[in-house]
Image (tube, rainbow, N blue to C red; front, top):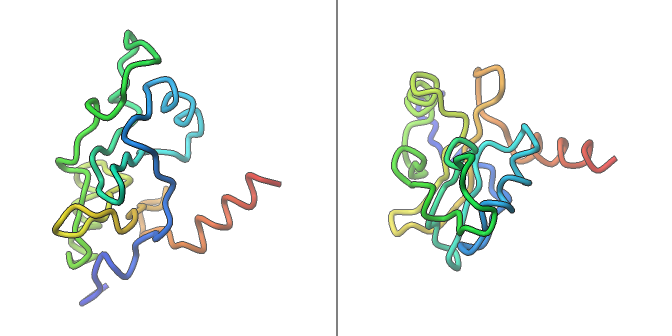
Length: 134
């Protein structure tokens, strides 16, 4: 991965959600164990990255989920070195990072494969979506 950047591995069409998405809606989403992060947008700008662990058991389903997530430690810019980012993700137990521009526009999602040896591609994600639909 020498000289390769995050931009070379980004999943370009991740599932996204409106910034008004509720805790109940994300609880339902997270029933799929392939989903590790929900990306909440205001227009094209990423406003929150919510993970399953952010949804505390006592929260009402109707509560807005956005404030429960964070962007800290959950985003990366496309120009970052891919190998260094992979090493950081492994060391920090991260399976997903939202890829954002310097201005906060969502560009995609960096997805660590379950085996931890590399990143998922658009083709991998499309194949899984087809398999689930069948």
